[in-house]
Amino acid sequence: MTDEPDPPAFTTHGGALDAARRLYPDAPTPWIDLSTGINPIAYPVDPLEADAWRRLPDAGALQALEAEAARFYRVPGGARVVAAPGTQAIIQRLPALFGGRDTRVLGLTTYGEFARVFAAAGIPTRSVAAIDDLVGADVAIVVNPNNPDGRLVAPRVLAGLASRVGALVVDEAFMDALGSAESIVPLLPRGRVVALRSFGKFYGLAGLRLGFAVAPDDLARDLGLALGPWAVSGPALAIGRRALADTDWTAATRRALRANAARLDALLETGGLTVLGGTPLFRLARHPAADAIFDMLARAGILTRPFAGASDWLRFGLPGGEAAWSRLADALDAVGIKAYSEKVDRPFR
Image (cartoon, rainbow, N blue to C red; front, side, top):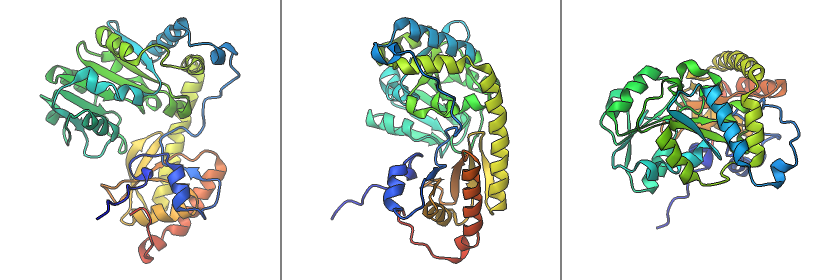
C-alpha cells in the first residue's frame, strides 16, 4: 500500500505558483497570483549604496532600523524591537523560547505554521473557538487580524489575557494595513508576551524577508540571541528603515488598500460570492461551488486560496493594476453559472 501524495502547497498556504503551473500547464500567462495577502503595489525600491551588498550587515544599521520600527509601531518603554529575516524565522524559534506542553491557537481556521512548528518540537497544539478558551494555556497564540476571516480581538482584551496564560504570542502580520489603534504593541504588558509584525505584506516586498518581534526587554534579548548575528541582510536593513520612515507613502497606501478592498468586495458579490470578511489586503468569500470556481479561475491563469477544511471558502488578494482587475472580472463572469451546472475534474482534490 502506498501513501497518498501530499496535496499541492496552495491548499495549505498562498503563493505556490509553481504547483499551480504544474497542475494547469495550459493556463494563460502571466499568472495573476491572488492567493496571498501581499500588497500588489510594492514600496518603490531605489538603488542602494554598494556597501549594503558588499559588507556584513552593520550593527549600527540594525539599531537604526529597530529604532525606526519602534517609532512606527509605537513601542512603549520596557519593550523593544527585534528584527528578523521574516516573521517565520521568529515563529521557528518560539518552541525553544517558551517550551510548555499546552499550546492553544485562537481560531478553528487560522495561520497553520504555528501548529506545524510546535508539533515538530513535540509540543501538541489545539485550536480553540473563543478567547476565554485560551486561559490557562502554557502558550496562547492569537493571529490578529485573523487570517483568513479578518477577525479582530481588541488590544485591551489581549493585554488582559497576558496575565492568565504562561506566554502570549500575538501575530499582527496584517496589522500595518490597519494602523496602530488595533495593535497590542502600544499596550504591551510585561512578562512573556511577543507581538509579531510582518514587513513584506504591507510594503509588497515579501522577497526581502524582513519581520519584527516586539517584546519586553528580557524576552527581546533572548530572542535576539537565538537569531544570532547578521540575521537581517544589509539591503533589508536599508530598505526597511527607509520605508518605515515614509509616512506619506504609508498613509496613501492605507487609503488605496481600503478603496481596493471595497472594489474587490463589489466584484465578488457581483460574481455571486458572499464576502465573509478579511483585511484591506485580502478578502474571504463563500460559495457552495468554491472548489469549482477555484479550478475555473486557475484554468484562466488566476490563483486564489482554497481551504481544505472549508470547501466553500476562497480567499482573494488584491489584483495589481487595471489589466489584472479586468481579467478577474471577465473570469468571474465566465465561471458564474458553470460552477453550478458543470462537473469539473479538480486535480487538487
